[in-house]
Every structure is written in C-alpha cells, then in structure tokens.
Length: 103
Image: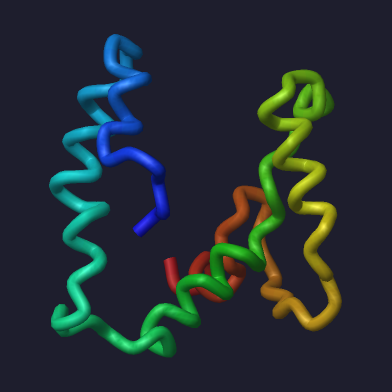
C-alpha cells in the first residue's frame, strides 16, 4: 500500500462529488486485490487479450491535446518505446480482422 503519512489522508477530499464512489471502489475491489492468498490466473492467461487491445488503432480526434488531462496522457504515452509491439490487422472500427471474419 502507499506509504501515506496519515491514515486519513483521503479525508481532504470528502465533499468531492466522486468521494463516496471512490471509497466504495476501494473497499469492494482495490483493497481486496492485495490478498496474497487469492487464487488468481497466471499473467499468460491475459496476454492475448492485452495484446489484442493494444494492437488496436487508438481513438483520436484533433482536439485531444487541447485540455490538460489529455495533453498529459499524450506526453506520458510518448515516453514508451514502440519497437517490438505486436501488430494485429484491424478493421475500421478497431476490431481484429480475424474476429470480423468469424462474424
């Protein structure tokens, strides 16, 4: 867990419109995800799914860099290497071509 100086650090955000939703998320899913005895699937199980998602052409429009949040995402993404990424042929809607052929 994060090394916070105080256990009630989140209280500074009480009153924010999304505070209660965040608390519920942390209690139901975030905290329980740190159970070392949980019987989980190996990462190799998820690899094909992750590769399929990251092989898609990203959604893009000209105004993406106009707001601070998207500008930060673009800057962060630019720091990751692109060599060695798996390429999957996709249709115009971003679906893998092999899936489209099965439909």
